[in-house]
Length: 157
Ligand SMILES: [Zn+2]
Image 1: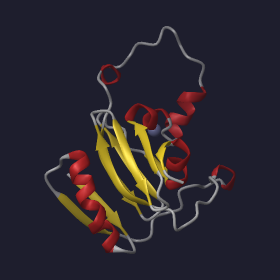
Image 2: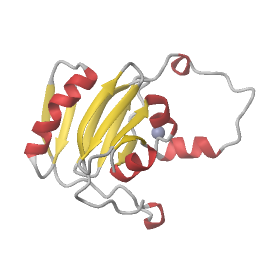
Image 3: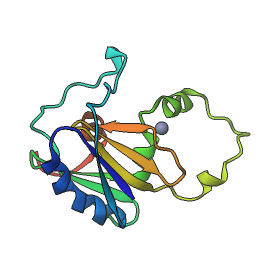
């Protein structure tokens, strides 16, 4: 089940719902209205460069088993592997983990031995997507700025 959260414009959610369904093959969609979400970044230093507000994803789709493709409103098409997205998870826990030196004696958790996949991608307002992963991790909010930064451009401006 995907929880679609939207605070201002239901038409956008309507448009995207189909894409989530095709990306994730889920059986039901629940709509949820809420108060405006809290700001993503508490520290202004961490705030990414503001993206031109007219640049938005128009289509999200799954390609093959391991990647996501996003078409953007400026004509660009960008490609992301699940692994790449997870490796750049912006949540505090993952950022901390990435800053630690690698530990050669670390034992892999069972959840790390199976390939990770998102189980849902939820729009958070108009500026970010929350990705929930097959290992239960769901605290990463991927801002549109971050997605523009991470994407490997396939075509477009
Ligand atoms: Zn994370």
